[in-house]
Length: 117
Image 1 (cartoon, rainbow, N blue to C red):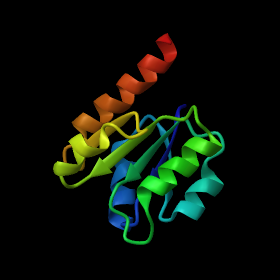
Image 2 (tube, one colour):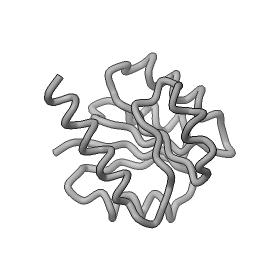
Image 3 (spheres, rainbow, N blue to C red):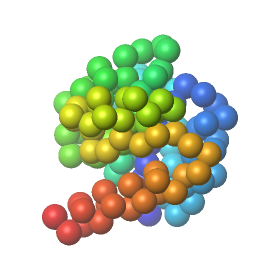
Image 4 (cartoon, rainbow, N blue to C red):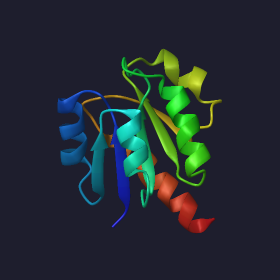
């Protein structure tokens, strides 16, 4: 079973990810420090762009430095970030929504690309 690490400061959002991403083993983290401790053996990271406790882009750099082969999906509730962050080192950018279809399709696409490549 593929392992996904969700980094988000909102508890209800983390619970929702765990519920919606059935078929995956989901670990959650509220902070970058906690995320770095849980990074081993993860197949994908979902990272909230707007975390008031720390710089999410810096955390993404740390994750890539530590485990460069793990794909990262940046999530934001604000659509304006999608285009601006697409040039960063993330593998995808998804708009947060109560409909998890885009996120699920993006996860599946990333795993399929990794499998084929």
